[in-house]
Length: 332
Image 1 (cartoon, rainbow, N blue to C red):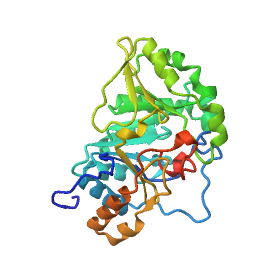
Image 2: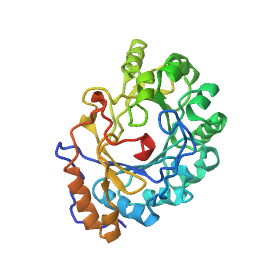
Image 3: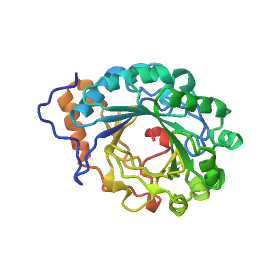
């Protein structure tokens, strides 16, 4: 059972943004080599990182649930590389107050595990797939896992998970194939999300070469009769479009759009126990000391104090990605 604080305030910042959504990274390790994230693959540091233990994860989930968090997304790195991922899913799903447990994955282990994860309490899965052309997929990911990922998508759909597909928008790899992809996936019961490429400290050159504004896709959709859905509670930042002739939905995540941060509703915990108030913000507030106290009040108060430092917005427009080295370091 989560700690009983009595009537506890929801995690809120100075700009009256309420945080009901936690992105919880459980590992930095990834087995893909995506160009925009880990082009050289995961590099194990000289000092082996101590990722959050099950007990620490339980403390965090309990405290966040007690302060109004209803949605938890497990991220990485690649979260399914943790051998205890089934237990982590079940731990989150059984926590009173948590209504949705989601996971973002590269899909490598999805085909053989989707049913077990659903039984453990997983309700939603976002699968990263940056091209539906096998050759381009291999170039982006540095793997030969295209068909394995497609099998995972099929299995996730069949076993009843709510499926979203994440595609990082890049000029040379998928921008020109947008309309063809719409037709290819026309009858898929999924949401295909295009995420605007974001600058990180390690990928400035790639950003300059490959960045294209998602507004261009938005204009194409509107011109072709797609309409914008109203956002539901606890939704992420995606603008979701539907069309009467298509079963698939299209989501656009446009971090360079004005006022993008106004509706922020999520906080991030890294795999090493740092609270990140923004994907492109500070170096993170270390929660390990508070976790070591094993006192939920201390942990809750530490998080409340950190929230007083949350800024009104990110500064990507100024080519300032904060301290984000690559997306895997913060859980995406």
